[in-house]
Length: 113
Length: 113
Image (cartoon, each protein chain N blue to C red):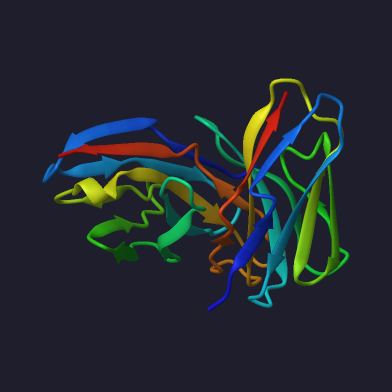
């Protein structure tokens, strides 16, 4: 089996700060995803990547940048943290194709003071 | 675009009650449908999936049948247990060439002992 590792698990930032979340997977999956989880709004796709150096915008990409420099890693940057923002960011990976399931990390919780 | 609608935001039941969580979808292609479960402090994990009309997915006593006619994939369990308390997400994934995965808003299930 494999594992998705997200770092850091908790991230506290200041308003206007640039904050970066990292994700590593050892499944050797081609496709990786970043989702944002807010209570009552489900999982909203921020960015995904179908291969190394590829980036695709999701429904919530404004205010975020992403980077996929290696097949095994996918990072997400909050370009300017919003005051009182609080959310959980979930990284996932999958094989390509319509039946592939997502494997998720445990999440990174962001709090902006 | 593709969308998933979960009718119930929260469900509260007693042990041994019957559970139904409704999931309806709208998709441009012929999607694969998924149910994921998320326990506190963890990322979502796959419960089961279905790829064809009338196919039934099942796991841990939960089941759902893919119905193309009513565009539905409702989650059911005959007798819930306290350990089933979690958040449940319905999701869809469409054809090759589009790796985007769309989730519903989630349903928080609470089982009273």
